[in-house]
Length: 74
Image (cartoon, rainbow, N blue to C red; front, side, top):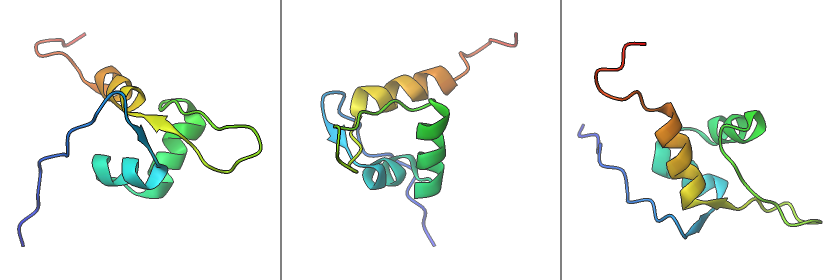
């Protein structure tokens, strides 16, 4: 069975749901919730709503922080 490895493009100015983030990152929804709870992934939540807004920029920032630069063995 073929596994697609190409991630859909993350648009910095777009707002994503937790489900969409899980799909983009190819992780479970509970992993996304853990990332949010730990502060690794930033989000905003309008007062009085259950809906969580995650910007593409927040996803890109988290991915940038988790990458190790080539040749960096510190």
